[in-house]
Amino acid sequence: MEFQGARENNMEEEEEAAEERIYVAVGSETAKNKSNLTWAIDNSEGRKICIVLVHQPAQMIPVLGTKFHAATVDEELVRAYREKEKAKADKILDEYLRICLQKRVHAEKLCVEMDSIEKGIVQMISQNRVKKFVMGAAADKHYLTKMVDLRSRKAIFVCQQASVTCHIRFVCKGHLIHTREPIINEGEEEEERISRTSSCRSASTSSYYGGSEASSSIDEASSSIDEVSSIITEETISNHSPPPSLPCSGMGLGMITFLINSTKLLHRLAIQNQKQPE
Image (cartoon, helix red, strand yellow):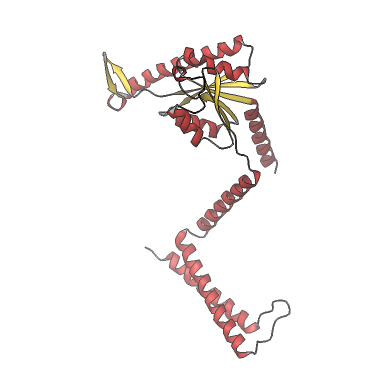
């Protein structure tokens, strides 16, 4: 179908765009994150930079010189205050964009709203199919010359939870500290895709036949047919006198007739059980 073909083309274009970009996580303090962004730009190899800032919506809202929890404050006041905070976050991203502009690197900005920074990053990587990502391994003040491990709780969480197909580099004070290589196994991905497709089809089939109750009744009917077939087969073998076989079926005419009638009866009972009110 043309629609399906267009959809596949769009997905391929999105994946190619993701391959071309390097996503870089930054914080609200430009001075402390400039070194990480600079490192990403210097190692971008001409790729586009996407600057990512996870904005955490304020939970404490200032009212008349005192802060109150958002759940206890008027919704309009909460909305207005959070809009101001989002505007500040957008200005911070613009500062990072100016750094890219000064280095003549094409860049774009992305603001993610999430209560947890590390969870926001993991979600962003998944939703945007990010293939290359750069973030801090620790605060600059914790940097040591021989530092080789992650010292940031956020970095450790992202390293463990982010999509395995994403190549992540963790830097600190402009130095590469740790690299998490991507895991790309086409066989496993195809197997997972087939598994998801089969699950969807099974769910659709169950819904078509009236849900789990109807499915259960039909399964019971099928089980009964199997038992009947097994008994007849055993009796036929023990008598050493198989009934006449049909040309292409290899099964006795009497057995076929019996199974057909049994199937109709059991199927009818299953439908009746389904229609009975609870």
